[in-house]
Image: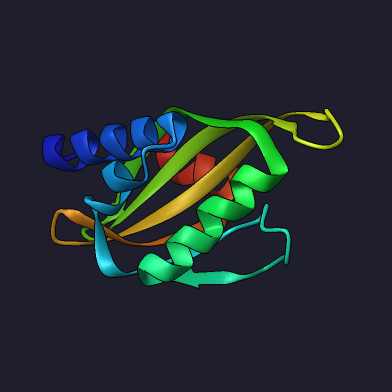
Length: 130
């Protein structure tokens, strides 16, 4: 994987885990789009800074904490990277513990993240691990 892209991935995941909104936003496009599986409104697509702020608020209201660890990643196409991740969290109201393997496809525009999609973990493993 490209060293610059790898560094941006590390920066974004560190920002997420530290709840550093500005650290996240400085590495995504202005029209950034993401699909969140954990959104309280379900299957919501978040767009731009306003969408990001709604997503961040949603996570903070539902989870304390919510953390993500990168397991593996590989570029699938010149502008797409597949990430194998492990999510950890605890439900804010329920106390329910979460540990889940997930997979994302990150879409790039230049050095910035433009879109984040969840994808099937088994298919992602096949892409990453060959």
